[in-house]
Image (cartoon, rainbow, N blue to C red; front, side):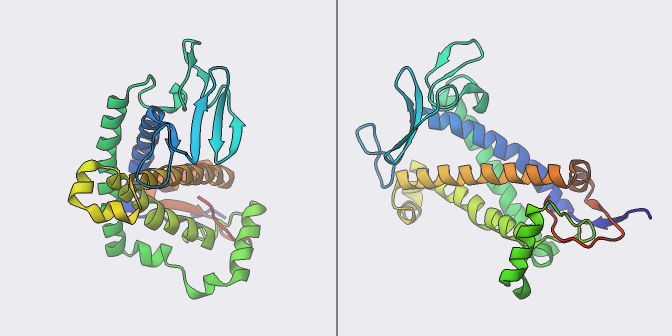
Length: 272
């Protein structure tokens, strides 16, 4: 029996997905170059080499390391100290292949970052507005009362652990998807925007309360970095789930909006 094509992703979701794939990649890579200028994170208002950092990526001229609190992890060859494309030692936090631009250039990195930050912020605002109007939030992201039941959540956790991806219910999101998408769209992404604004001296003057919400510019920078790390983890898990559940049909559904739905299925849990 031939598979039935089910509607899965609205046009606004597909456009925003691919726009985000580009903007978040550029923002992450240019942000890592900006971080290279001062690879230390602090809490509060101020931060300098003389102040105590809760996270530091640096080198001892012979080894690279990451220091979190009082714990030091050697990361020679990856973070802190690595070889460039010309086989010369680079004493920067993140290697050139992970940054935009690839060679140290703080001014260029800021231009890339600020330009794509506005594109990202406008895209998120447009997606949220469209999702409210076209029913995407209500139909696909709203977590219903029955889905909060521990046994329902545990069932989806077990299905994902067993790689049981249900094509029969491909037009819906399971509870783990809803938790992750709601967390990313309504918590992590807005936090990225507001902490970014809180680090801007111009915004500090225009909206001082934004600066105060995060208890200082350095605290906002730390939260900004942690949100970026969580988003990176989410993207990696997202790509892994797409690969395990069928990359061709997953990518096709995000291009066409339609998903090949099996005629019968007894398992539960979609991850794409």
